Amino acid sequence: MESIKYHRILLKLGGEALAGASGFGIDPEQAAQIARRVQDVREMGVDVAIVIGAGNLWRGREGLNSGMDRATADYMGMLATIMNALALMDGMESINLVTRVQSAIEMHTVAEPYIRRRAIRHLEKGRVVIFGGGTGNPYFSTDTAAALRAMEIDADVLIKATKVDGIYDCDPKKNPGAKKFDHLTYIETLNRQLEVMDSTAISLCMENKLPILVLNLWDESALRDALLGKHVGTLVSDGEG
Image (cartoon, rainbow, N blue to C red; front, side):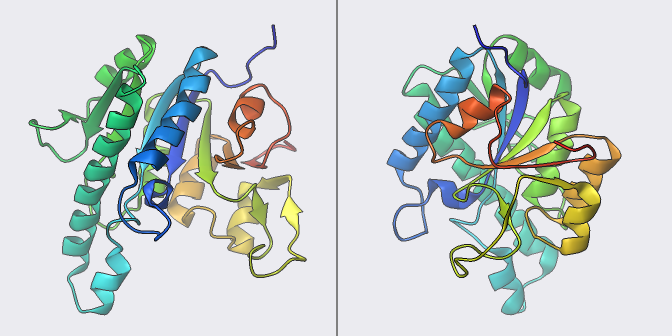
């Protein structure tokens, strides 16, 4: 039997992962696809926690450009992540994955309040935990929420799941000659301003030596291969990968 490199992971998804062809809204089939990826991981015995963004429902930048108060725009984004978390939970439970949604903003009717020890207990019992509501505070992104929650639950790695197979020196969709990195240090990622995650999230991971792995979630074998320690995507850490 192949050995597993990472036994507990925090999966960071952009809200766009749930969007349909239009790039907006929630497509139940997209939620189902993500659920099947997570099911594969759970069958390996890996603990899975998830943080999801809200870009498919609300982009605070658009509100700011229209003169909206920053805190108000951020709170709206946090509420949108709860909607995405519930949609993702529904996709998980439709294939019998026991799932819990915890929210940093209390709303007892639809989600548990975020309690670190309870979240860890859910993971120990084999449940998938989805963290909604960001950090519960404005001015912090869901990237930062993902880094924070990953460390609070003692995750072995923070996996940034995208539709690109790693980190490039420029946008590979616009530049066919873009160079892909197999490994970067935290400092290199910050200095190059590669925009994989925001600088607060990367700095938090650097300070606590939490590796970040960027991979293409839509590649059926990528996540499984990464958990088995195979070279997949781009690893950001303080070592050589």
